Image 1 (cartoon, rainbow, N blue to C red):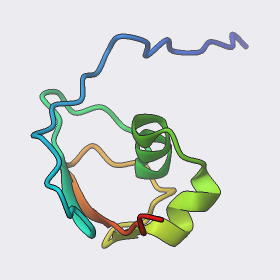
Image 2: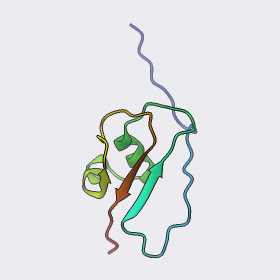
Image 3: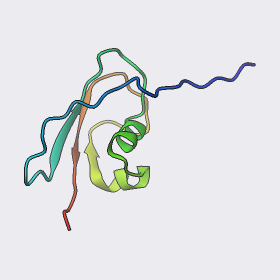
Length: 82
């Protein structure tokens, strides 16, 4: 059996408009140019620089966070500015 890991560094880009002054809650849409199976939880954690545990408290989404998807998806990010 051969084990391998994919190196995704540099394979995706975040395109985002400027954040409004009072952005919370923030609606975010993730779209794919090419279908790549990814777990939304991992993509969101990496993209926003937050822990997976924090995602459970901050993200409202209609699909399972820990199940791979190749389809575009949207979520709402809840945050409180302190």
